[in-house]
Structure formats: structure tokens, C-alpha cells
Length: 155
Image 1 (cartoon, rainbow, N blue to C red):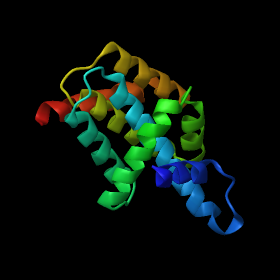
Image 2: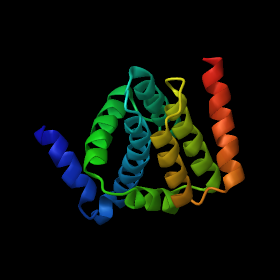
Image 3: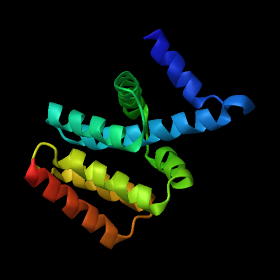
């Protein structure tokens, strides 16, 4: 637990000049993971399928080892529980990702939402809110949703 608290404090402290690029990358990874976790948490019946979808998304977005993904997911779950809004996470993503990367992320978020085969109203609300904060055009948002639905149907 103390290691996790240290990680959280390290994530919010100002970066030193020597590690600023690495620090920014860690903050971007955390922001991405928190948004994926928020979709997972939006489902009142949280299951293993959603967690697997989050892990698959993180594996696709970042070149991380399995233990790093587990640690990132744990930190993201803790951060998501304390978060009061999405803006700090989406603003970091807007600063770092091109539109294509943001669209891929939205598709991953949809895959998390559809991982259990159903889409709840709260999951849909979280998706719309995040897409708006990421400045995703509505047509692209709908296409990402359709691709995720198709992928869910193939599983």
C-alpha cells in the first residue's frame, strides 16, 4: 500500500528536468487507464470480461509488461475512485494524442463497455461525456461504437 501511495504522489508531483519525458508518459498512461476504468466502473455488474478488455486496451496502447499493466490498472482504479471529473485526464490525452489515437482509444472504451454483451445507460453516458471532452466528431464516435459492437459479436 505504501508503494502505491508513493506512486500516486510521484504521479502528481512536478517532474524534474531529467525525467520529464518519462514522467509525462507515465501521466498519459495513467490518464488513459483511468478513462478505461471509468467505463468499467460504470457497469453496476462489474465482471472479469470488462477487466480483460481494459488490459487488452492498455496492452494495445502502450508497450508495457504484464506486471506493469497490472500495476497501472491498480493505480488507475484507485485514482478513478478519488476523481471528481474527467477533465484532468482528457486534457492530458488531448495534449498528447492525435485524433487517430483518440479514436482508437474511444473504440477501446466501447469494447470495455460491450465486454459483457450489454450496454448500460451509465456506460453510454460516460462514453458520450469522454468523447465530447476529447473533441471526437459524432460520426467518428458512432463508427468507433459500431466497430466495437462488431468485435463484441465476433467474440
